[in-house]
Length: 235
Image (tube, rainbow, N blue to C red; front, side, top):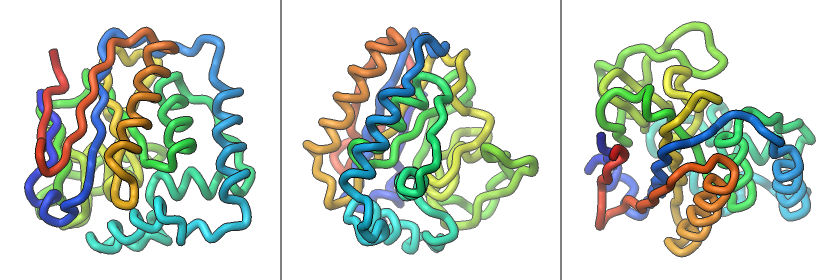
C-alpha cells in the first residue's frame, strides 16, 4: 500500500508539501482524555488571532486560493484549518473524539496547518492525492446521510473504492474515519507557502511524539513533494 501525490497535483501546486505519518500498533481507546491540551490549543489561537481577519492570515489565505484554483468557493467550503480556527474564535467547544483525532486537532491549531487521518485497515489499495475524474463514485461524508460524488476537477484523497476526503481537506468520508478500534493509521499534515519545510517538519515531529506518548504507536514519517511523490504506508 502506497501514499501517492499524483503528477497533476504537483503540476498545479508545485510548492505543496505533504507530511505523512504512518502509525502501527495504535491504542486509540480513550483514557484520561486530552481536554486540557485541546483547551490550551484553543486558547493559543484566541490569544494570537482574536480580532484579526482570519481570511487574510497567510496560513489560511493560501488554502482559500488553492480552493479557488480547483473551483471550490472557500466561503461555502472552508478548508479544515479555517473551519477549526473560526469555530475556536466563535467560542464553540471542541469536543474530544478519540486520542488520534484530538492530537491532530491540537497540532493543527497550534501550527495552523490542515491535519487529518485515515484508518489504514479501512483503506482499499493505494491512497492518492489527485484531481477527481468524471467517473467518481458517490461517497458518504462524515455527518451526512446520503452519498455524493466529488465534482470533476476538485482535489481529493481517494483509494481504489472512491474518495476518502473531498475538496482536499474540507470533509472526510465516514468509511475510513479514525475510531477507538483503529490500530493502523495514516496522519497527514499539509503545507502550502508561506509554510516552510522546516516548519512542517517541526509540526510533524511534535505530532509524532504526542502520538507515541498517548497511543503507544510506532511512527514513521515522510515528506512528499516535488523530489519524492510517494511512500509506503504498510509494513
